[in-house]
Amino acid sequence: MMSRYTILFLLLFGIAISSNAQNDYKNAIGVRVGPSSGMTYKTTFRNNKSAEFLLTTRWGALMGTGLFEISQDIFGINRFNFYYGLGGHVGLWNGEKDQAWFDSEDTEMMAGVDGIIGVGFTFEKIPFEISLDWKPVFNIAAYTDFWVDEGAFSLRYI
Image (cartoon, rainbow, N blue to C red; front, side, top):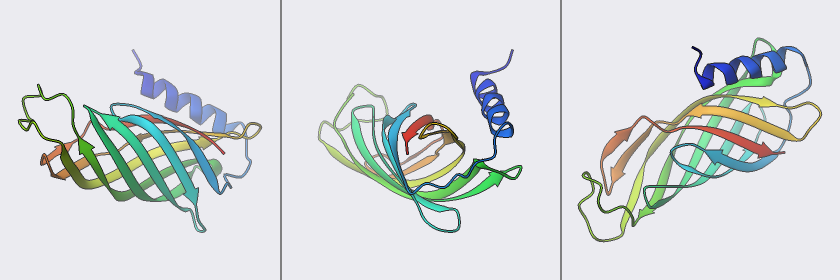
């Protein structure tokens, strides 16, 4: 049985093959849904470079993340792209004190390094972009650990 991510990838691939418009947009804002859910804002620069800013929540923490990303067309289709990048996050932790790995009763400031790798698709007839990514996180303040489960689906209005 195919996973939902495989089905989504095949759907995006099929849509991308059937069209050939530009992936040119300056700004996009939307929602991000995954283990850390929230808002996403992406602004693009020249030469397939962009900055993405996230405001997300998870386990009672509110985190802000900034990422620098580089994208490349997949199979020469400029509305279907692969992207990767690096950045960092800061946030405040004040929730779910019953987690075995968090033993403080105080509000803590979190900080760390983030990576991202994903695929995105910009629709031709409607002003939306969808993307599916994996964003590993290494926390270096408040709780030091490597989180590998930060995958998400995003829908952005262009």
